[in-house]
Length: 248
Image: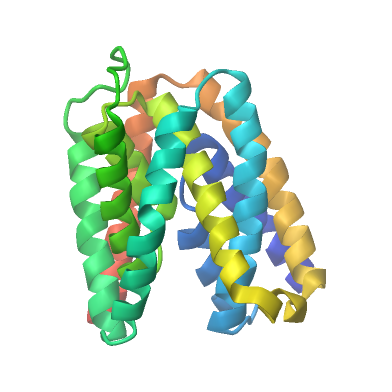
């Protein structure tokens, strides 16, 4: 019963984050599965992908209904990052865990600071060039592959700061990127899904999906600038916690 309650609570928080901010799924889901629910790291990362894929796809449909998804940009972004992510993953196998955590914390902190600066949250969207989207996606794919997490939490700042999307469209487009990347990663894991504890994963995912709908409604009530600042503060908090974990 305790595991079920923890799974429901953690799922609701993760769904709220994905629905409102377009990121935070893997950053929050994997630690929750390991430290709260006793999953092994391998099982936690696989279960996290299942949960994030389902939740992101659900939130994506809600954002798409309101025209907040840049489909071409998102698909180019995701496709360009696939190869670099695989190369980054191979490189990560030869790096110390502490260095990986510190590296992610540094990248996340820089992205957060950029988003806290006066920006374009409510400005008119400028046309995004395919080459820029592909280059940004490739760069994010490499960073994500090396550091292991950060799909949505780094995609949103890149979509806002590098490609000039408004915050609402960056959130919606990030969900498209996360869905594609999560499904691709699951495809590489094959039979590991069969060994998951579905009595925990299923309610976790269900609560996350419901939370994503609430997150979408919350995002609709906030100004783009407010949403952007909230995202940046959350990202900075994640960066600080990971840096502390890497040092201690």
